[in-house]
Length: 418
Image 1 (cartoon, helix red, strand yellow):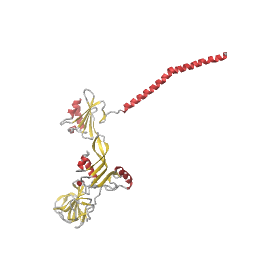
Image 2 (cartoon, rainbow, N blue to C red):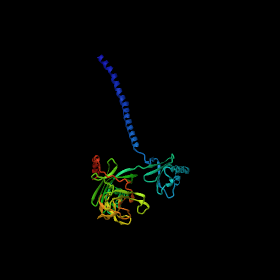
Image 3 (cartoon, helix red, strand yellow):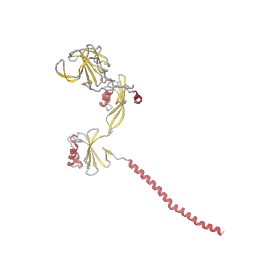
Image 4 (tube, rainbow, N blue to C red):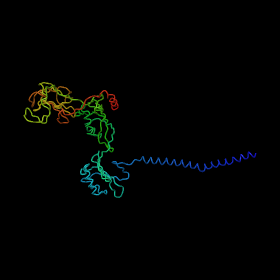
């Protein structure tokens, strides 16, 4: 028993030591563990708050952070100059004069336009001291006059693209219909150019319809232009025409639903001829008048009666006789191009104003009527209402989609034509 009691007695200190450790843990370690967890949560909250603060981006204007500054916007008044504006914002006349002088290589302040937009970035204090003066000469550009470091710089605003789909039925004219969409002449000119070979825009009729998919250029939330028309549909006299914008390695152009180019080529020459006796010249010795004068055509020598062909599809606008021209025919091919054929022995049967003709169709016969010294054709070429040398102008391409590009083209066509 005594031995057993000693053993028990020896174990008691160990028991009490364990109890003490447990008690210490309960009263000291556990609270510390709780504190550690609390600290971790606080650190997480602090990090989250820092992230949320970081996510609040500063307000930017013309490349400047303006959250801690005041902004003044205005328009140039009649006869108002830079001095009259900035002197009210704690800028000395000496500084203003220095800015105006330095500015001439970037933008001359004397060219400020009435109602031109300007913006002033000011200190947020009682003096309202100007830090930057920004002037917009147009909707695309702005000039920064930095009053902090004295620099002057020209910048372009960022242009974003917005895809739009518009359409309509023509009631009176294409221009008036598009005016209602907000595009007016801007889109009218593009469509006339795209469909110049398919649609006679001089004979648009009520009920013609169109649909256009385009990318418009946007600055500060406002439309400023058209980047491109990516696809278009025009129904003219109940005949549908399609245009798809595509690059097959030779530059972008428009093609129809069957992968044919919307552009059409002209014939190299309007007849079979022996030689060219005279070319386009601003100063040529006239064989009949015996004086120097402009010759705005190309003379092809050929036998009397040789058929004369129109170099492209079009509509006859003139078919008559005049003293100098003799018998002649004029053909309007589209909104851009017209051709004229002079000194005919006679005009072909059925050729009169308003008649449609096809490329290669006979419209008259070689002769020497009018002011001519012998049988020949004087061929004249108009571009945008002005006589030009047909040899010197670059006519639009007319190649269809090449085989290697057809899969991509037809995939794009199916996406656009719905």
